[in-house]
Amino acid sequence: MTMTLPVAELTPATLEAMYGLSKASKRNSLDPRLQELVQVRVSQVNGCAYCVDLHTGEAHAAGEEQRRLDLLPVWREAPGFDGRERAALALAEAVTALPAGVPEAVREEAARHFDQQELAELLWVVATINTWNRVVATTGAWQVSR
Image 1: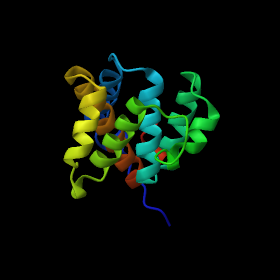
Image 2: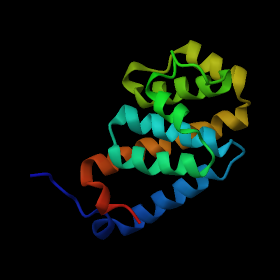
Image 3: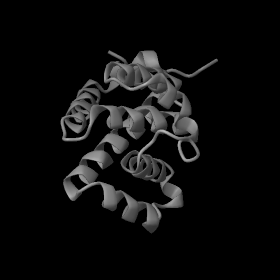
């Protein structure tokens, strides 16, 4: 039996703050397709099927191509991703696997493709989806979805 935790009922103020963080982290200068690619990839790494499904749909709505979404798990070897996208995906994966640390080479590559404002915005997108993945993985998606 899967444990479920009624997060919405137990911590409504925290959940509302998390929704606010999600909205704020998406109000930035980054291309919405890039944001969704990052959110899909982080959710894949974290094994969060609910968030992969949600952000794949949002990526489609933002104009992302199915072929690129299909290739996202193997983006390092796949054609069709530009240097900026590769830098964002590498940073997102490194932040997601934080116990391994964020390699200096990953930080430097990201800094070549994003200015400081964009890097800060990208970091918030990555941090927010990582938090959602962990909440959903622990509680069950139906407990926190709107």
